[in-house]
Length: 238
Image (cartoon, rainbow, N blue to C red; front, top):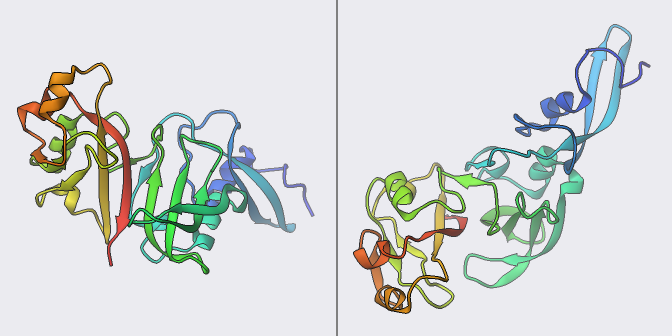
C-alpha cells in the first residue's frame, strides 16, 4: 500500500475537498479547520486511505443556500459528512419560537464560521427548523451579511420592507419583506434580519424610530439612523 502522502503532486487537503464537498476556494495555509475527513484514492497498486485535516476558509464570506448540507431534508450526519465529524457539537440552541432545545453547532469555537442548527427532531437531529449565525459571522444569505446597510438590503429585496422600531429584544427585526426577493429564497427557507444602530445616534433621532411601531425601511426616521444588519438567521417553513 502506498503512503497517503505520495503521488499526485497536490496538497493533501485538496483531495479532501473532493470527498467532503466543502468549498475551500481562497484558503491559505492550514490553520483552524472544518474538522477531518477520510480521503480514499486508487491507483494501479490498489487503494489507500488517509485522514486529512480540512482548513477553514479564511477570506471570503461563506454563502448559505437552502441546498446541499443545508437542504430541507438534511440531517446532522449530512452536515458531518461535509464539514467533518469533529466540527459538530451538540448543545441547546434557539428555536424558531425563541425557546431553547437540543440542537447542533457547527464550529462552536470559531465565531466567524459558527452555525447553530435547530431540529424538529431533536433526538435524531433531523428536519431543520432554524439556522442562526453570530454577530461577527462571515456567512452570507442572498447577499446579506453582517454590516450590510439598510439601503443595500432594500436593493437586494427589490422593494422597501416593514420592520419593528428600535429598542427592546425585537427592535430592528424585519417583519415583512412585502413580497420582495428576500421573501422568496429557494426551498422553504425564510431569511430573518435584525438591524442595529450606532450607540452614538442622538436620543432624539432614536426616539423617532423606536418603540413597538412598525416602520417602512424607507421611512426617513429609520434612514436617519443608518441601520446596518446586526444579526440574521434562516427559518425553515413547512
